[in-house]
Length: 460
Image (tube, rainbow, N blue to C red; front, side):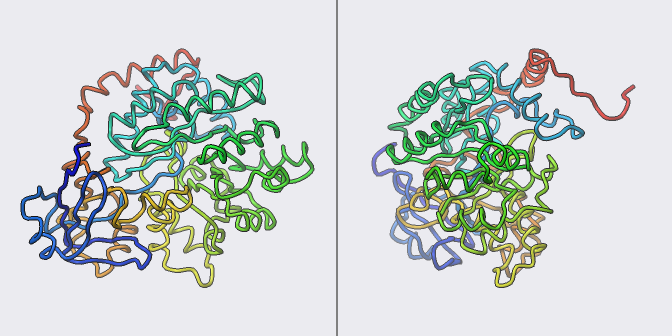
């Protein structure tokens, strides 16, 4: 990045999402070297910086770049919406998703990651926690670089069971983790995380050493746990206690850990996660898509209302399917309304917080992202208030954004001070050319995995 490269961002309204949740009207933001250098009234900042390039205008609502705290960038995306609804979630994962992952080439991984991150960017997502690359993390890193967004990168680690790239020893698995940490060591926008598959596919020894590795390298640990009852049943049979309580006994809970899902929690597990400041990534659309019981057993609104560290994710191309955090936020707002928790703040406000600053806190990066504040990354979403979804404009832009407009009206996106989307088009790649052979790739992958998706109704 060129030293002292500056520009201005202007808008009708800025939702800063700072500690005071300030809303600034007739605002301007000065961006220097990818960081926010100044925020204030437009007239004052323009007067001091009249020679700088200006992005935005009078008709834009500006919000922080959105955070997707759990997203599979490879595997499912190239067969999106192909896995049948009529099978169990375990069948969807082990009989479909994992064989597809195993069939991926390095080029498939890059194409898949680029495709997901391009869609993410067009939907205002500027930071993605990647849920684990099975085979080619270097190719997924290229996907981040192709689009220009930030995120985390991991390589699936498992030492129980027989799956693609599962380690035969704990040292094998940890070696792959170290490779990712080294790959991202000096990267300006992507951070390596220690990433395990989770569930009941990790030995106690691996889990403890992976947690230690994350802490020693000042990074985070993430894995899947308890999206359904099978993890609970497995841990009870093996250890005599429920999953979260076993993790507590191992000493691996804490601020460095982000657990994906944790839908099936009892009172003691919920309390333990809150007390240890362990974070959860909630992917509400995935739980409904896979029928995992979130409306009957899910306690994420309660967890958040009691001070739990929570974030939102979209999951995978056959579990949630769309890469749209504002859609996930809207659904979560509905779950908040249904929970009827006393003392809970506005559902729409909570939902936007989870997609921005609270999500950033959950992944340990609130000093970098999640709000429009001086010193933070210049990740900014430009929403066109001339879009039909914003007519007429509500006095409460947060309520209108979450319940009504969603991604409609997202015009442009800035990441690390660089415009990466303008008028709904990714500037960094030619999407039509890059993705011209997706149908052929899908058919090849399905064929190699021995899978044959079909429509439910007869086709003539």
